[in-house]
Length: 343
Image (cartoon, rainbow, N blue to C red; front, side):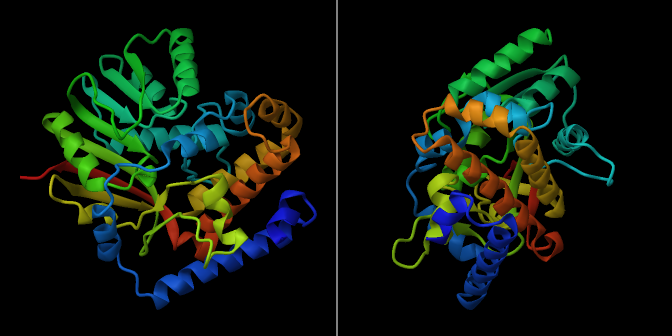
């Protein structure tokens, strides 16, 4: 009931945000009472046969939404992931560039490498790598034909000839070669069978090759996004139903539980307030450009009324901002990891 009222904009933003913070407190309370551990969640993931589940739904929820919608909301690099805000004066575009640069630094990229990006989005990192490492060959994989078309258009306009893009499902993707670096930004959150994927990635690496992973995560707890008709309220299930079907919230240490094939060589925690500010800025951009955003959404395939779609996106950005700003960014944040083959 309250969710329906919120989607129809009968509730003010401050009331919606208050409800979101209540749900976050309840999420933490349940996790602490259940004494949930990363090891237990890793054991559960090992029992999942599929590399990823509900990939078509997740794809349609985000990545087949008309590109024009995201052009009204995101920054100039069209980076649909956390920015890095190292001062109050930083713009959205500068935060995108700062995180792209930091990603390349922590992945230990050097010019001349063969690089594979898994889950490349609208190509912010792949285009950045192709431009800043001109002697490297960049191979990008996306689950979205819309994204592939956009990236290829951008590469042509920028005169980049060292970038190829494949449309594929990560569960069945087989790359055309082997690589010095595999990089992934906010794709592992859509994966269930980490063991399988890490084993495959190891086989794609050249001698001395490494994997860099960027995920959003909770500092201590890991949990799935699943619709629970018996125990979950409409509000608790809302994110899963509309934006994150089949996803997981990893914990910061989750990747360390899957060390049979790849081991974490280095890791970094990024305060959640960086992501909160990113989401708040996306929300402001959406509100400023609401007419353009509505027109873009109207061109998509979502059967919901455009006004409801627009409000759902507003609520999504609010929910993410509240999540990452909770407890001053100390609970949920971003993890960076550099992994190497075991032994």
